[in-house]
Length: 417
Image 1 (tube, rainbow, N blue to C red):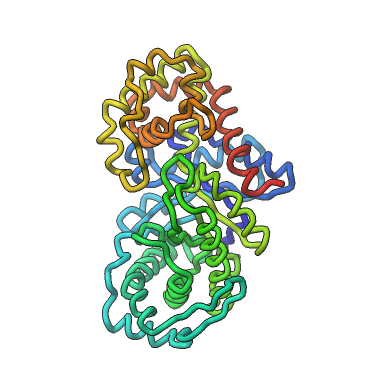
Image 2: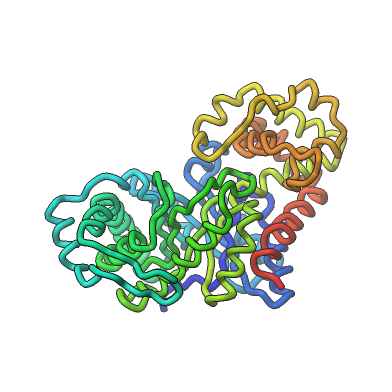
């Protein structure tokens, strides 16, 4: 029997592998309200390299948390943003693979492959009416060709990665996600349909797909963009997926995935309305949020915990250019609004917490501080045992913040009545 992802799945990052129980507690609170959400622990190779951890540590932490908490439903471990160069280290311990084909987007496939693909989907040409989309889709041969030139090579890359994993783990023994969000502009409904047709031809049993949406999905802060436009795009994408599943025989449970979905409060309402209207599923990733809750918990504990949190900020401020450079496309930090380390050194616990905790209407909330610390986990990694020992010492305040954040700010508005 093939591994099949459930209707609602929630990707959680755990940079230092100490918060799996607290994360699972949020999912269990939702289950108590009658909403089944399966946790997916995701950690990329870049995060492992930065922390100095190995993929097996994510599996060990997830499995141990589920056993200790008595969670007998599904849980998964995601080899996040994986390609052929990186996949081997994740094969023994992952059962969910996010295929990252960003490098191939925009690289043209062979002219023969493009021509053959265009010929194979010519029945799409014309005005196409899809249930759930108000206007008809106008699809021309030129549009199919242009879309194939941009995305067919990426789809072929996804097929290559999928077949490599299937050869090692066996078909049906893992969940496949395809990431198409790292491109210059959002896919239109016709483009998404063409991409799905290509995935079907590549025989990739994709169960979740991450397209690019309008707006900014910056790390750890709210969505920046037109929420009404997002809602239309999200709704149209759901309709395209439902149509493609029937037309091309893709997995019946294929669902949208929202990457960098943590803290995108202004689109949680639109997402929920679309899910309730259509009955569709969702996968959403919230990597990075938990690490910030660790800092909040440390600060809230006061004493040595607060001192450590202040030190993390001071070093992040000092190395801000190097920390921000790899994430330049997904952060918008106003350096002028970053307080000096000397100022932060004089903060009380509540001042630190209020600056960092994501309550956008709080007068002390500082989104630039939050984004800097979001990408500053490398600082804590370099502290080694000093940081890890403090996580244990301040476990009560940290775990409470981790659970409350995931449940109250994420799961409730998205899924729980």
